[in-house]
Image (cartoon, one colour):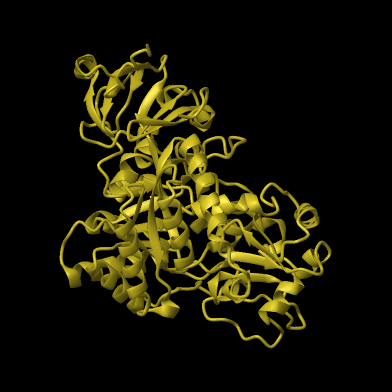
Length: 549
């Protein structure tokens, strides 16, 4: 006679630790979840659990909070990096070249050698020569993306296949740095230049991309993340997401920002609508496509971020606007009219102003509604524009890990901006003080995807070495509670999700940390806390100590 199996628990109750929810005045100690939702807290949670034969999980004094969510990242790029030469860890040009040579020798059948993300500050002005890569791989094309994903470094064979010569004119929305004799150096800046090479590269297979998304999702789960905004999705990548969702290979939730290119506008609008319709027709809860991505400008390190005043190093240049202000305003209004959420890359203060103007135009044309447009990165925000985030209901998405005086900042960014402007970067506390809704992201693989690393910098404005001692621009440091909220309730607000807090009815996405972030002695040490488990819709999807369910 076979044993009778006990019934499956009808819910889960986490207890035995501190339970924290953004915005609550008091801590909690118990949280109950059922059918993917928070159902009760504290004594109500205990009573609910007993009444429903729930599974009681003792968190052993640890810290329970809403799971983190990343408001701006590139999961597919991050997942694919493991397939190529591991250049990110290299600390010299020679080290990068040696790693490319090693990878090429280990993969003799690869038609192209493709990798990311090299450190731009390793060469003067971020300019890398094709001939350096020729020494490693002379017979096959090599394509490496810089950490910023706005720049690439290629060898001579790649330039040859792309038809880039001394006679190639400067591309629209791009730059081709040249040697003194006019020949292309091998560094490509921004899409107009990078696309000349990617257009002749063989596409990644759908299966390779699905595998990359699966790896990325598991990586996110290990860091306590359950929702990610992919901030740049083109049709080829959409196919991979759809295949991954259909095969149930998305470990966490993803929202896609479908890319709008000014070179293809307004024809792109139909492509965006079709892409969203395909995702909706598939109907998988972990995949949505509610957002459209615009690039308003480039990056400071390339002198392509759009500034209100000229660059210190290039007095005749204020950078590059990807769209004219009028074009961007009309395009943002067009996607807004179709119910998309605009998500605009804005690094420079001129780009921020143009982005805010575009959202204001959309409101004027389409009327008031809860659109929650996003301006991403907000590296430089003129004081006159800070109040406008609150007035327009615009989400200020920032990548807090960048708010430190690291080598990239000191070698490339500060010299281009000058000390005065450099000291105004990443005004996180100022934006909060003006009533802006702040969300955090990582821009992974541009920088680490670990939320606790970003929180540590947001609260200290220091490097790993705790420099400077008082923090860089210390008036912009955040309280721990505010930084955690930006990575939880702030990103949930951006995502139009009922999540990011532990109110009954919210999504039961949780993370359990090894300790209470609010009691860490020094804010720079917040990243020493560990993620012990991650829960999506009430189900544990990552455990640091147990086998995965």
